Length: 314
Length: 288
Image 1: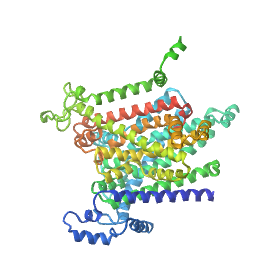
Image 2: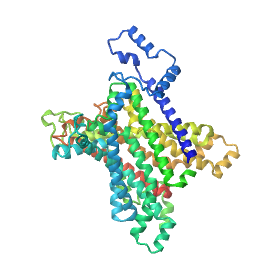
Image 3: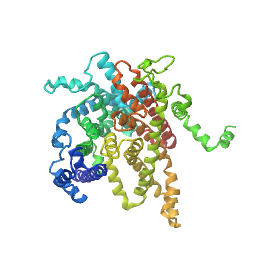
Image 4: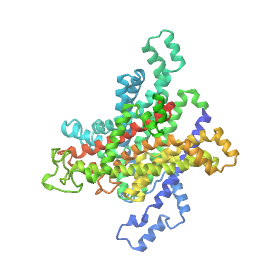
């Protein structure tokens, strides 16, 4: 188990190093001098040169990269050009809505996807399977921002059940603010349930064709017992992976939904940073999102290995 | 009789006959065909010019004159959707071509040249550690917003998926006896890759192409919606929803119909991709 963990950890570090390298060098391809961007239109050539020296921008590219990596490793993601504060601070201020949105969305996705997938597999080929698989197919191809706009019209504007947008007053009670997440989380939950449905169905079908299921049936066990006691738990093991990865991708992938619902999350921060060309914020957000993704990935692998001893050996 | 018909049928006809055995795939192909034809023939089939403004008829609901209603400038929504399909589908198709080219090249290299495998695959892993839309918006931010750069950004985002598929198939194919035989005969690596390996990995690539087409149509709409994609004055299904959203309270049709076009196009592509996969590789049918 320790060796399994170490191998995965090494892979994770390599991926993160590559992400950092990619993000750094791609950003340097962007048009415009970061120092000139920081100072605005009024800056003189001398001002820009001075700022370039302060930030080490006059050094060779590889030296800059080294300095940048050193800063990241000590937890410093740089300074936002526009927000006038450290990127880490800007990100942590925006983390709460994104975190709860991802958590809610993936819970809804799993609550829809797992039962739908199990039912599809158990009644394979019947009308219920065809309906559920069809619905999953449609859900996977709905643009989340469009569904968001329709939900806002229907449930917020017409029916008035939920707030239209935003994350409520910062001083408001926590539960009141969570109410703002119901609609966006439902949108993301529905759109992301499709993959979980298909995955659960496939996994359940795999298990149902295994020998031990045939044995259980030939012992004369009730179908209910075979499905719930013998098949269900085993079928869920691979589903852990897809649920975990969905959660991981939602941390930075909910950009469009956060924008539609005006949620002050990380996605929203990235969009405004892109529109203002605030590169340190974009870089920092990419590094943090990738780190969250690979860490959740690692956690999922570990849970998977604990649940299924065959994986550890492989 | 049947055997004779089969023997006479060209491979192309046989291909479509097997593909359309599932009704849903046939319907999806017809739907996509109508959307594509409408886009191609836009100047002839659209009832109005896409930019023809008539402020007297702004935000009118669907009627006999404007079948799908009008937008905030009194422009005909159906006509804009038909013209918008050109950009949306055109960008999707260009992303398919470019991501396939990049992905196939690197996939073949990773699968066939041992020394490059680890490097290429770790790079693909690194790119896939970022959510598609986040990586896309980052790339567009660097390249600048334009239709061409949206194509380039989305192609870079989807290329790693192609790399994985092509690499996996290449690894399998390059161990097959006929490739070994070709190598023993002194056939050059380039020729082996081009003739033997590429032809044999064509079907998984084709399946992946339809899926990427669907993802690209969805992603382009998302980027345009965020204002980080195609310039807002170019009508695409995404920009139509983006500019219409502030009027949605009084005129829901402004956002409803362009969104339906996206769903229909992406869904059709996905169904066709599923059909192709089932036909070309029955073993894969159950997985995902």
